[in-house]
Length: 118
Image: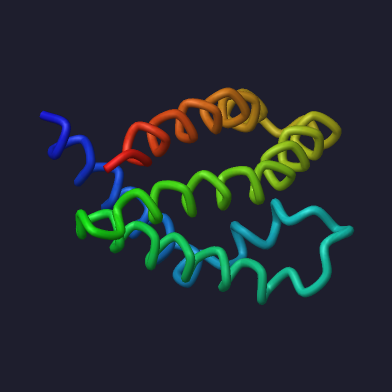
């Protein structure tokens, strides 16, 4: 069961990383304006998700991949906060999704943490 859940997580990150390239505009919209080089950051975070997700398949680097995913989730958290604030100010009907993403981030961090030990 734990392996099945691991594979779901791996494919989730790989798929999310691919979406950074297919739906770049969506990710650019949630980038906080104070961050430099938003397009490059979207691509870099997409590559990281693909690489880290792929690393989860290999037991020898799985703990490292899990820690890298945790660091990535912490790094992108400001974008989630920015999106929630922006959706609130613009009366976006998907504000509930943006607000749901905030605690979901902590759940994703815990999920990755489960795989940090060998």
